[in-house]
Amino acid sequence: MNILVNGPQGSGKTTQAKLLAEKYNLNFLDSGSMLRESFDTDLGKKAKEYMDKGAYVPEDIYFQILKQFIETKCDKSKGIIMTGFPRTVAQIPFMENELNIKLDHVIDLKVSPEEFMKRLELRRDLEKRDDETPKAIRSRLLEHERKTGPVIDYFREQGIVLEVNGEGSIEDIHQNILNSISK
Ligand code: AMP
Image (cartoon, rainbow, N blue to C red; front, top):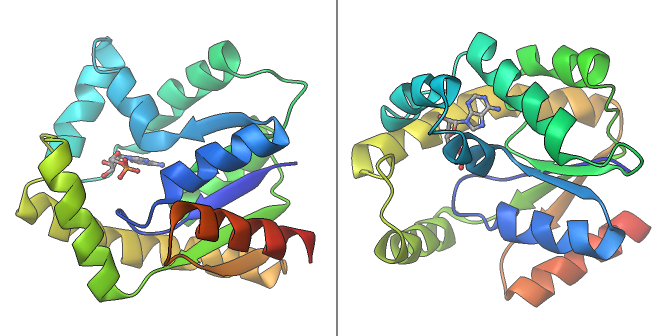
């Protein structure tokens, strides 16, 4: 089983994806963490320059880091649960044709703008990241909406998008996701 969890920054998508990976015994890819963990490599250093500005990492750099991750960190006999990839429509053919991943479900976490800002404020207090200045956050939010909207639309046409209420406790949301997958 291959699953994409989508949601804006602060939606809890990484936490939920991790829980699902444990529940279904799947490989786990959090695109942002993968990139941050590559910062001590030459490619990772290049990626960081874009991330610090709140921009997406260009595909030629991103795909190399991703391919390496899939080859070295993933168990090929298992499916995968991903967040943050594919993030643009242009990344979908790479997933399907180069990595041979066909999605079974796309979980689209829905969070109201008020709840969203609240969570972001909380997280910013907890972990200081270079790419979490207010300006970078705004830029990322806009870019997320502009670029992932078409990704979700692409999978909606295939009938595999599950819209899930992303408000409530971590356990509540996890349960909402499990319910919608088993329907
Ligand atoms: P995230 O932790 O998912 O919010 O990602 C942090 C940053 O990593 C993003 O703002 C982008 O700069 C970069 N990034 C993550 N995923 C991708 C992707 N699929 N393609 C390009 N850049 C990405």
